[in-house]
Length: 172
Ligand SMILES: [Cu+2]
Image (cartoon, rainbow, N blue to C red; front, side, top):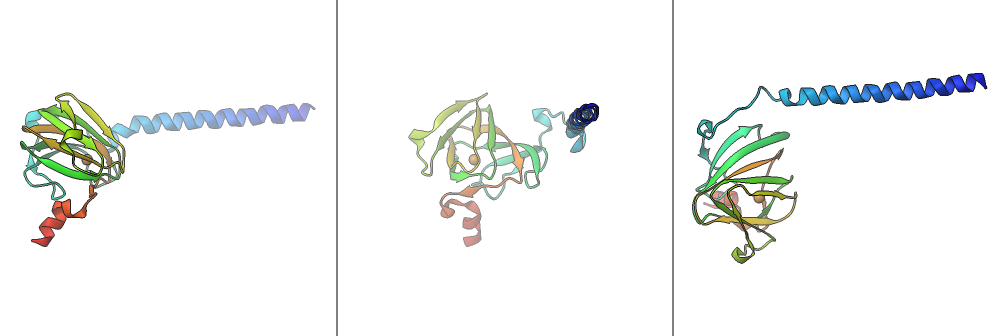
């Protein structure tokens, strides 16, 4: 009896210690996480370095990386600037798309056919989460800047491969 109780107490003790250990470990990982990338990020809009948008987007877009690298595993944040009357044909991404409208008005809709009437008007300050693999499309009427964040490696797959600017570029 005595031994059983002792073993039981020991057993509980072991579980308690491992739980404590796991908690401490998680806390340490969490504390380490923000610094894991490099250093802190403090960017004003003026600090952004705009370059031509990626070849996966129709010409005319500008992009500015802010955090991480969309091509690599991990969190990334970037801004995209679209000219007026810009359209991104139905497509989907390998991970959830998080989008914040920084300036202008963005129009976004879900489905595999670009339907202007089916878009939602998203004025400055709007926020969207588009689940991975969910086909969607987007357009602008005036110049619009959006901030995109998600988990890399990021990508874009057009529902209709003919809409992919990369295949158009390759065909030229
Ligand atoms: Cu998208």
